[in-house]
Length: 106
Image (tube, helix red, strand yellow):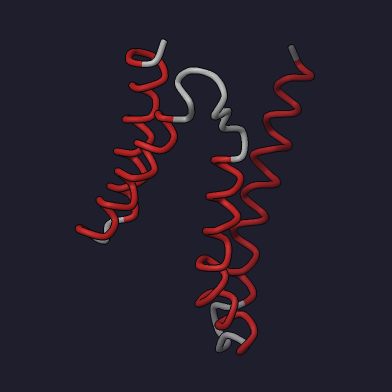
């Protein structure tokens, strides 16, 4: 039991340090151009990677032929194109996907 608690504390501390160190270093200085570049273009560069990672295990030879993934992906694309709200499109797409794989395509 103490090992689990130690692992949880180590994970929490590591996450805190990783997320807080940039704020400590860049609070009183201007951001370097490289950091600005990464902040502007890296999220868009990672989107194709996330799409490939999310859809890589679709098996089109057996039922449901990847329909749940494709339907949820289309809903995410449509919602994001219409409302331009990242949280809305991802959360609705995730909930729809879970509904489809657990209720519809059993």
